[in-house]
Image (cartoon, rainbow, N blue to C red; front, side, top):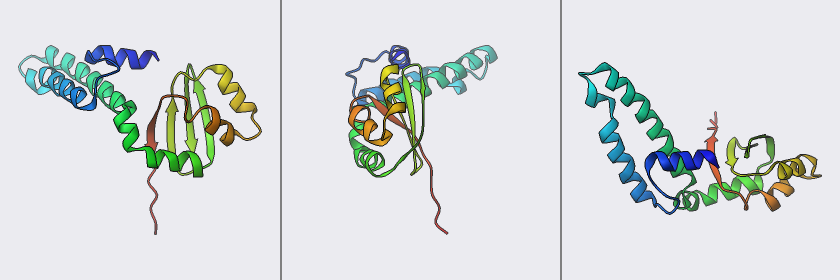
Length: 150
């Protein structure tokens, strides 16, 4: 996916970069581009703010798709895809966004349009997704709504 490649290029990392190294790269970039470093020069400060926002976005995205993060979140992910119904889904480009009844929202990357069309036309969208999407495509958790008990 283009966004993954763009983020990796921005931070100068590869697909084999681990979380520890990614964190080090991120911290070094933030030291160089933190807006507070440029209080005397307004134009540099504004440029640093934009650059730091991009760096933060790239870092959080790459952390969310890292194998270590996915391994750590596997129990929550497994629970969502096995026991929570699909409420809604949307396909843009090659990204499939799936909303679950428990409030979880996951993005799946590089999902071809033909797979999306098969999902739409499947007798059981949940079963189709479990068989052909959930364990096949790179994913990340976008959000998990919090439920309050009164």
